[in-house]
Length: 125
Image (cartoon, rainbow, N blue to C red):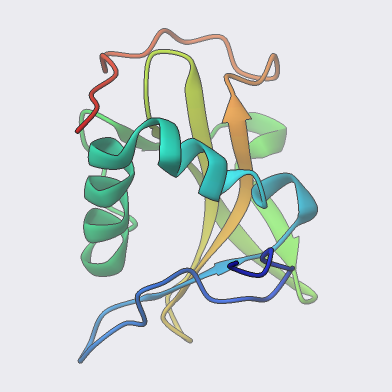
């Protein structure tokens, strides 16, 4: 049985070379493994993209705006982004470019704090 992840834990697999390290920053992000079971193809793509280019706007990732645009992680104010996992599920994350860490801050159903529609349809393997 795999132990449940905790805040600060690394999201497997570990990074190689110049890749970004993916880690859980909040308890709201700890739902990511369950979402990964539901949408394995989309979450594999998510991890691959965030390991190399977490701060590049794309069809499924964009910076959050307004009061959600930044978040404090470990006393440091970091830009916060959103990744559309599926039509109804999102990942919010912060990019610490200096330390090369992507901090997952929220994983779950589309939060009511944002109101844009996803361009992504769910895929499964």
